Amino acid sequence: MSKILVIDDVQDIFYLVKSILEPAHQVFWSESLRSAEEALKHKKIDLILLDVMLPDGNGFHFLAELQTKMKDTLPPVVFLTAQSHVSEKVLGFSLGAEDYITKNSDYLEMKARLEARVRKLSASSEIKKIESFGPIKINVHTQEVFWNTEGQDKLIELTRLEFKIFWLLIHHLGETVSRDEILQKVWGPGFQVYTRSVDTHVSNLRRKLPKVVFLIESASGHGYKMNLI
Image (cartoon, rainbow, N blue to C red; front, side):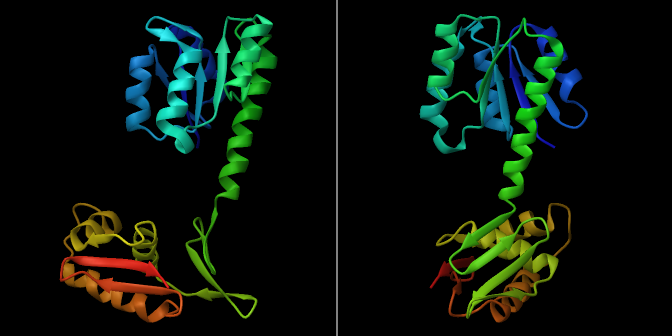
């Protein structure tokens, strides 16, 4: 399910987008650029639908600012606006917008273009199912880890908890992750689990991972740190 943020001071536009994309996707609304900034800080947004003329600023300027602030983490942006001059469309695309849809578009055309954009998001997320770290490939959805050795991908059989610990450590390469953080992010809050359980699972993980690729170090009784060799 993709998360779409509609930035528009007209609530009816938000309801229109909701009618097109929900319930298959989740649609949020910000009626100003200020509230949109807050939403982007606290939500993982997959697509932004942005008006040009807003009460507290200009959508073109806002996109330029987001590109500076968010850089590679900026989700795709589609302008959805009443501004229909060719020069404005050219400016929108030159700023890196994925599409430029005018509000006076035929409903079926708007629906088709929004649905096409969301399908593209879904296709991109499928590609991102597989992550690679050197000779290691990780299938995020099946929680499988493969080691490419002698030209073949060999499955490293991990339990669900071992995979979650591995996933946490590999995304903090070179950084110490405390036992408490591992407990919170792997088991979750509310579970009565002793920190000794972390040590046991990390020990099993060390045994299963190829030692020519990974090194998991204990950090003075505080936690663990993973490095690629």
